[in-house]
Image 1 (spheres, helix red, strand yellow):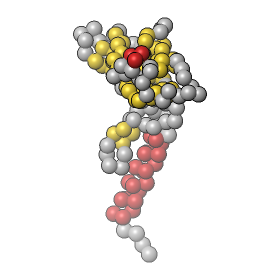
Image 2 (tube, helix red, strand yellow; image 1 turned 90 degrees about the vertical axis):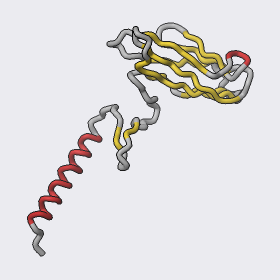
Image 3 (tube, helix red, strand yellow; image 1 turned 180 degrees about the vertical axis):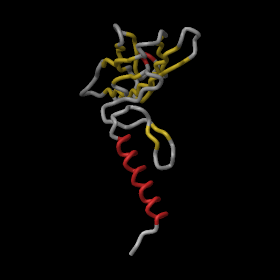
Image 4 (cartoon, helix red, strand yellow; image 1 turned 90 degrees about the horizontal axis):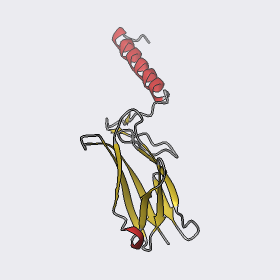
Amino acid sequence: MAISSSARFVLAAFTAAAAAAMIAGCSGSPSSQVTPTGISQQPSVKGHCPAHGGVRATPCSVSFSVSSPGPDTVTVRTPEDKKGTLSESDNCGGASGIATVTQGTGDDWTVAAGSTTGSCTATFDYTNKRGKVIGHADLSITNSI
């Protein structure tokens, strides 16, 4: 059975596109990926937290329990080539709430369990000198104590 030249062209174009997609997927780039539906998303790599505008909190979640009461240290990285200010805000309620988040030394922040069980989020915003948020990282905190 002979294949028409237009069918060969379509098959060759599809093969080239598939090869290019496989090569691009193996490049090791941490950039976002496009799903079959065309929606861009952050790659999900075990042990890696998403970075928004170059800001990353590691780990990106902290859980306190009787066997692991904390406190825990979270490292927040910011873009090295830009000058800006890092600030933290949360809905954790402090020592009488779910948790406290305090700045340690350098890039480290200390997260300690509060006296209330539940979940909350700490957000680290990186702002430029004009006060515009140019990056952020979220830290999920769960207290089961």
